[in-house]
Image (cartoon, rainbow, N blue to C red; front, side):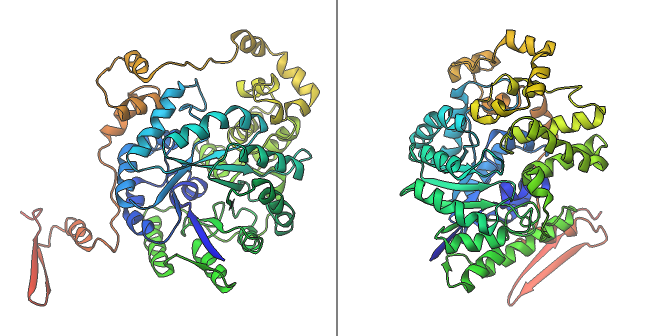
Length: 498
């Protein structure tokens, strides 16, 4: 079988291992080679959540990054998660027309060709897919529908069969099994994947998993045996650990099993070496093979969420209580009737767990989102009908619950882009600037990003002259360097020397 590969290095690899901390310069240093390494699809950080991270924490311009990746990987199909037109997933919803403009601009600049839509609840399929899939088709963007995996009394084969049929009814280009927690086993794949493939009909099926239990590489080989041709992998050091399996070992194993592929394995090894040097320079962690860890089947926290949870707990000096927070998240999930451990529910449950642990009393402080959950705001399939009755009564009796009920759901404004531009007060700004201010809910953090200056460059072995110049500038005692090859020579003067 001809095996196809989707690369997750820039998006899910970074999210799972570096808390989405991969800088623009890191991506740009290897992007051209990643684009010609033979991947069928390459993930990029092209949605509002990553834009916010890039501006707020990395102090870099995401639009410049997207333009650069489009230029360096012109022939690659570039993909990102994008399950909503709302550019503010964890706050006041933004007008749908702004979301449409966001994806339109990314498509026009050649930075996005495929959007991966999470179908993490039955209700989302009913609510979001009828809008999202036609919208993306109209923009020339492929839709890949994720059938998100979970383990609970509610998540049976029939549940996944139904979800697959409902997703297939909207005619996406791809359906893929998304094992965000790395929970899949070889035995479970043998029973579940045929169910998904049968109900997907003629729509191609892919598999996406994480190495959090150490089983994903074996699961991928079994997926090939079952006839699944497309695997989601990453380039070390942004592979393994809580991220996807390494493309290097996966491609080798697939080849040894008699399959073929289009990857340039020598080029990928070289890219991996250069990316490893970049990681070591910035003291970033390396994804490593994971031993089997049964606790993952208990808490089910996704790889990207666990990475950010560690990062955020360290920021409030609670990193030493990570195990307590994880244990509490397990109790909360059971209390709530087993919601799918994926965005946004996984973030809500982990945040509530941190509150319960830090205050020393369960549900003393409660997120608005948990109260809304008890009120049924996330639909029947979220699990709220099965949640603990005493907890539901407790949450609904809180004064805040009455306030939220009186206020009602935050309405989604059906207004035009021009009306948004007039409201901001800058009628002449570009679409990119308008979208960035909408995502960041203002201009303050954008100004801080621009004040930080250009994004840092990362020079690698494929840029020898730039590397030479950078090193020369560090040594004021060196007056000049002369490089000669045959009859050709070049002299580089160090202007720092007085």
